[in-house]
Image 1 (tube, rainbow, N blue to C red):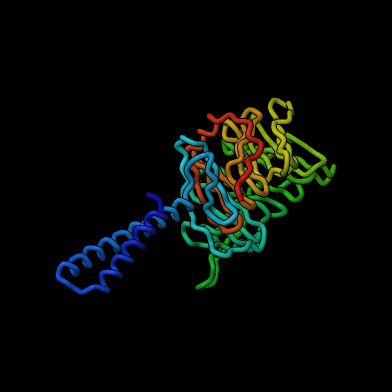
Image 2 (tube, rainbow, N blue to C red):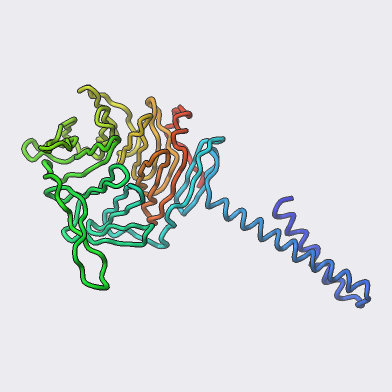
Length: 341
């Protein structure tokens, strides 16, 4: 029985109760009033339960083929019959509007950096101020979180702060940055990628940091166009240049994938494929095919073990999708998916 049928039954019960009240109150009638009143309460509870079920279903994500919205302007589509599940990690902030650049990574816990000065640890409800500011943040492994300014990158070290004020920190330098406007990206095997502009040639370059002293950088790619992102495992490497992902392996450079509509903001190499984000979506690429499964404004992603974490840019809410290695089972040439309004 559907919701409309329940409503009709409640209305009929209410009308019956009304008619009974208009009659004489015999003992038999009073017993029936009590019986119908109990039924009425029961039916109302069922309707409330159905409404709650419908409401909850709008805030969870289940199968491919359904457009399931967890927030306004946010839709997730997952393959049917998979064991992938969506879970809230950090609840969204209502009416949040980002004031500046927001960055996201995941070490042993989610970390959000914003306004080039603040580092938010949402699980601990703690914010740290980085006094000199920073341009980039990257996570390597479980406990390594790196920050970069215009000159060098390093890790955060606590700084004395006044009582009853936000905790403060500064960047303890590890190595100088050889590129201007440098951004860092973490990869597999604790590989650190640095992309930016070579001041001498004015070319955009992608480098891999060599963490053995004396520290150095190995150039893997250069371009006249802006390099948006980089990922890999140190041997197999990928860079995103506008709408194109390039694969670099054994000094061979080949086009790996071209997005038809948008530039790549992030790419994360998993070992079996690439997870990526654009300004309006997140997806997965394997064997030359792309599958977009999240549609939202400015998403950011982090891959930890077999779980993908997604920062929803409009709310700072974080969700996770478990068992994401199952995406490699769906080798489908899905270039785009039309959603219902």
